[in-house]
Amino acid sequence: MKVVPIRGRGAQGEDPPGVRPRSTLAVEGEEAQRLRAALRSLRAMAGSTRCLAEMLGLREEHVQKVIGGKRASYGVAVRAAKLAGTSVDRLLGRPTAVNCCPVWGRSG
Image (cartoon, rainbow, N blue to C red):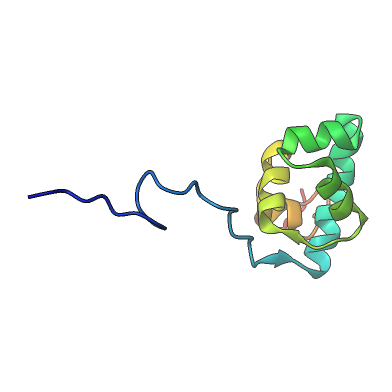
């Protein structure tokens, strides 16, 4: 019996993986505005767009485009939330009053 390796797409050890598929889910509407605002705040703390991009693990051009209003994926939101030390829900959600409980909505 002779073992014949399988050649072509899909075989282990063959053909390096191509470009990862792009996320089809885009941040839109008010969430996109909040993401851009969060990125601007993070950029101010980082000192420059280049530094922020490095911290996010993205290209500087991509971060500039997102801040400028281009479409962003939820992957960018996840990275920004992780860098900010918060959740994606809190990063993209409606702002709450300082004297208001974020869970129950009571002031106190």
